Amino acid sequence: METRELTVVAGSFVGFQFLFSVASPHFSWIITPGYGRVPLNKRTEWNSRLVSTVHALIVGLFCLYILWFDHVVNADPVWGDPSLVKLNVAITCGYLLYDLVLLATNWSTMGDGFFVCHHLAALYAYGYVLTRGVLPYFANFRLISELSTPFVNQRWFFEALKYPRSHRLVVINGVAMAVVFFLVRCAVMPSYWSSVFATFGTEAFTRLGLAAQVAWISSCIALDILNVIWMYKIARGCYKVIKGRWGARKGKEEVSEKEVTEKEVEKKDGKHVNNHMD
Image (cartoon, rainbow, N blue to C red):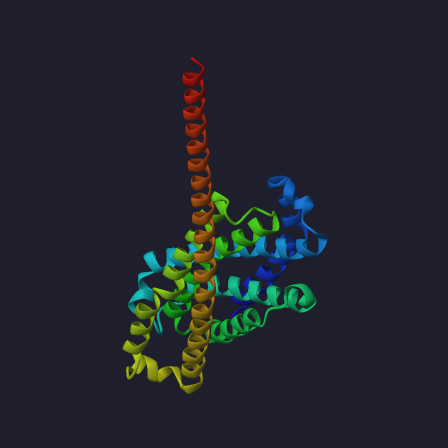
């Protein structure tokens, strides 16, 4: 690994730690008064998720830029010039290391085995990108998945602020989260794996060596299994939210119709009494 990548990894680790410890608490007090009502044991996760959103936006947008404009990497997905990709991957590795330390030190409240598996699988694969400069296109392509993270975090923020699940903003974010998560993590699987299979048997693939091949394929399989599991959970949650909001709306409409009917009956009864009295 070159000095530039090591510096970026270290800088990323320190920068995200600063965002978590200093910037996020101050910024959260400014953007929402509700932060003060969040229990102290949840503020750690709040700050963690705000940092996660910042990382996702930086890396996700950088990823799209590389996919659209780095023609060298797109032309040679296995051995193309990895300079920009290594920079993006180094930022992510610094973040993953910071997040693993955070999970370890707050395991009782934030511990999640799925996240640990995800982070370790990603670090295992990205290590080959940073040390050998291989598979730049595929490494960058995997980072598209980060674009779903802000929506996932926003759902948690709404829950922490005790927004009802039937609230319009919660429903809109839930639907957007499910759609974006599916698009950037599941819908891209056929395209990604077709590109992977296209390299099999080529000279570029053979030059990787068995260790890099195993690291690449096994980590991708592990990450995609996790993505499918998370997609299933998100889809179920989204269905429940939409169903709950639809049920609440339907209940209000029924109550409203009942009130209108009762008023009409009262009017008719009133007219009948008046006619009798005349």
